[in-house]
Length: 336
Image (tube, rainbow, N blue to C red; front, side, top):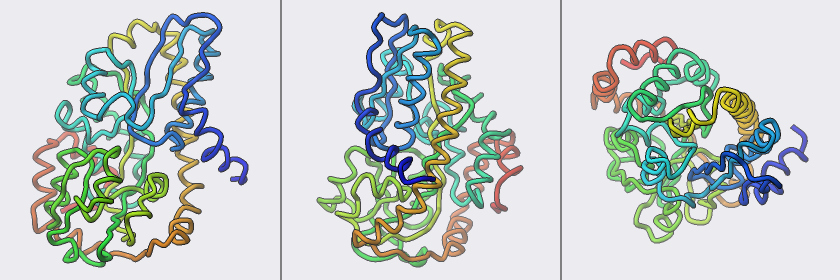
């Protein structure tokens, strides 16, 4: 990837992404808000905004989507509620945040389920993804587009000590993003997890409400957690992604032709953002190290054994049910 492209992703596009798309000369038939909790410069937002421009052009100005990053439209639970009521027309949202509506959506976050990102996408673009999308659409009154955005494998950062084995997690005050499975994962690992939204996380770390957090490296850099955290322990404990959601009634009103254009362009954007993550992650570890963060490997086997001892996989197999678990096992590591 040429440097100029990375410059685009992290530079000028962030400014463009912050303001959404330029208003068309003629009023659009559909003015749609698109919310999420990520920074404006994150590939998910950057590539979404690019796609919105293509959608506006391909629909001859009928459909105008505008991005609202960094939780501008409210907290994640609030945005989900607004989407279902029609106050917001579209969201990018992690599956785990939909747990209260569609429990299967959080299966993407099952700890140590996937050996690598290639397997993740085989699962999410394949049978497992279909099971998840069907459950969200059946229970949530939302349309889910086919391709999932990549947020990535999550690592643990701390201000007090590095995490080498699962024993180092005992009693650790760690922030997890809201979602039943993420809280249960760290409780099963022996930590003391606290759900906090991404928009409030920096302040919570700065004021030592919590001592640790877990996120992909790209977000650790973009959110400037290197200013309030010292250690990065490479645990790769959970993979996380974002689904593109539309309010069902709004989607129906768009009509087949506009639906097809939106689906096509958002698929292209999602695949581009996945490639962006590969290239950006090649450099972000070095950037964080230059900013003073200390990296260490983790004994992942100690983590996995702790989860087995806590009957974590048995519990979630019962929660997700046999159909979803069978779809997961087509792709997953051996979990029990």
